[in-house]
Structure formats: C-alpha cells, structure tokens
Image 1: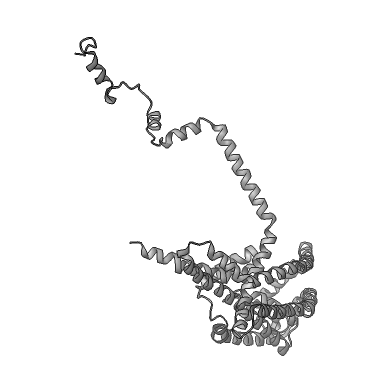
Image 2: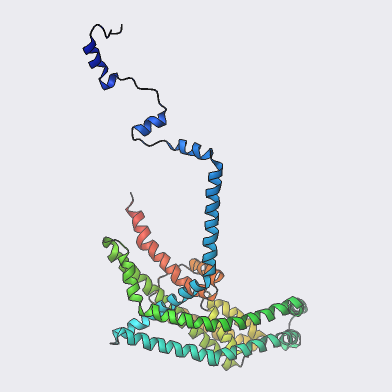
Amino acid sequence: MQDDPADDGPRYLRRMSHPRARLRPARPAALRRLAEGKPVPGRIGVLAAIERPLVIAFIATLGVLGGIVLGSAIASITTILAYIFMALFIALGLDPVVRRLERRGLKRGGAIGLVFAVFAVVVLLLAVYVLPRVIAETAAFIGSLPEAIAGIESADWFTSMSADAQTAISHGLDELTAALARPETIAAIGGGALAVGVGIISGISAGFVVVALTLYFLASLEAMKLALYALAPARSRVRLADMTERVTASVGSSLLGSVVLSSINAGVVLGLHLLIGLPYPVLMAAIAFVITLIPLFGSVIFLVLGSLVALLSSPAQALGFAIGYLVYIQLESYVVSPRVMNKAIAIPAALVLIGALVGGTLLGVLGVLIALPVMATILLIIREVVVPKQDAKL
C-alpha cells in the first residue's frame, strides 16, 4: 500500500528525498561503469574497432610504410654503421696497449699518439710492400693454375699410384679443368678481380674515415664510458662500471690477441714457404692471416688449404709444409695462444664456430674478427646478470 502524499506530505517528501529512494533510469552497463569512474571492458573497444575497418586498415598501412621507411634509412647508412663499428672495435683493440703505456708513465695523449703512429706505419708498410706482392702473386697463381693441374698426370707420384686411383684423380682433374675453362667461370674470376680492385680503391678512401673515427674513439673512450654510466640509476652505476670495464677489457684483449695470433701464423707460413721453396709465399701468408682470424678452427682450415696448394708443386714439398705447420699448430695451442689470449673469456668451441659463421656471413672478415669478442660479451652478461637473477627466484 503506497503512501498518499495528501495524508502526510512532509513525511513523504523526506522519505523520497533520501538517496536510496530516488528513482534511477535504466542505463547500459558500460555507461554506468563510466559514470562510476570504472574502466570499460576491452570487448567494447574491440567491437568498436571492428565496426571501423577502414580506420584499422589506414593505421596498419601507416605502420607498414613507417617500417619500410625506417628499414630503407638503416640500409642506406649500413656502410657508415660498419665504419663506426670497425673504428670502435679497433679502438678497443688498441686500448690495452695504451693502458700499458700509461702504467709505464706516459700520459694518455702521448700513449695514444705513439700507438697510433706505430699502427699507421704498419698499415702504410703493408699497403706499400705487401699489397702489390699479393696482387702480383694472385694473378700469377690464377694464370698458372690450369698448367699446374695438367702437369699433375705426368708427375712421378701420380704414375706410381694404382690404375683405379689414377682414373679417379684424372676424372676429377678433367672436371676441374672444364670448370675453369667455362666462360662463366672466367667472367666470375675477372669480375672478382675487378671487384677486388674497386674494393681496394674504396677501401683506401674508407680507411681515412675509419682512422679518424678510431683516433676519436681512442681519445674519448673514458668519456664515453662515463656518459654510459650516467644513464643508469645511481644504485646500479658501480655494477655497470664493473661490467663495462670487464667487457671492454675482454673485447680489447680478444681483438688484439686474434690479430697477434694471425700475424704469427702469417709469419710462420711465409717462413715455411721460403724454407721449403714453395711458390706464392706472400699470397699464402696473406690468406693465412685472414683465415686464422677464425678462432680455434682457422689454423686447421689453412693446414688443409695450404697442403693442397703445395701439392700442386710436389708431394714432398706438400708433406714438408703439412708437417711443419702441424708442429706450429701444436705450439700455438699449448704455448702461444694461452699467453696471448690470457684475458679472454673461455667460450665453448661450438659457440665459437657458430659466431664465426654468422659474423662472416653478415660482415665478412670484420664479422669473423668481432665474432669472438661479441660472443664473449654475451656470455659475460648472461653469467653476471641473467643467471644471478634466475638463481634468486624461488
């Protein structure tokens, strides 16, 4: 039974003025949640977006176009980025020498000037005396290759083999000779020689840029580290500084050690070729320097390659080279490498091979050279940052 306002007007008005007694119109759930300051469920936004397909398509198109423009911009500056990374890694490789000179009493500016002067003299000597010999011996090797292959069948060691072995080797030599005589092979060799010439010319111009960037990075390396530390929170700067110093020391030692080991390999190959009387000593020494930049496996790869090239001269010379270089590999593994790479982080052999393959595919010789320090840096970060965080989780 409802109250009649006429019976008790004041009491009815007081009861109807109470908030709970007010009549509220029916509203949708989304509007009611908005009125109460609560978030609206995501389903409404999804449904609203589906109802506007043109807007979605337009936004997606803008995203794709933005990605294409960004990718094109990065691709257009790939060469500049390669110069920057090359200069940075060279600076990290020279920094341990600068630090050693600083510990002997030289100021950093004087140490940088001395190291850079020696580095420039070495590069100049290689460009003036080694590079022309490498080019000349490369042309001579390519020109004499068909004649050397044809002379194998008349060699004494070939005639002393069994008939089946002679047939198999002759078939392989015929296939190789036919492949070398094909027009596409000749064009590829000529194009490769032209590409090498163009690369040398462009490399000279790029060398000035890399040298200038290397000098700048080497002089401002400490300032760059301090700027990096300032970006981290104050509570993490000490740990970041310790990690950065260890990473840069590992990278510098790895790069410098790799170059030193490759240089020793090149010297040993040059000495063996001159001692045994093998042709193309400078060319094979240059090839040995490049191949032995691959850590762990480079020396073994060049052992096989150098022995095969020496076999074109005579089996006795090839055997002498293989024995001499194998002896050096043992000395390198147990005596030379531990002394040179004493500050590098231990890396599993499988990861070394994977890193060298990936780096060589992406950046060529530079990628092979920086593969070891990059893998060492990644492993150091995993051991010092990721693993402790995982161990702290219970």
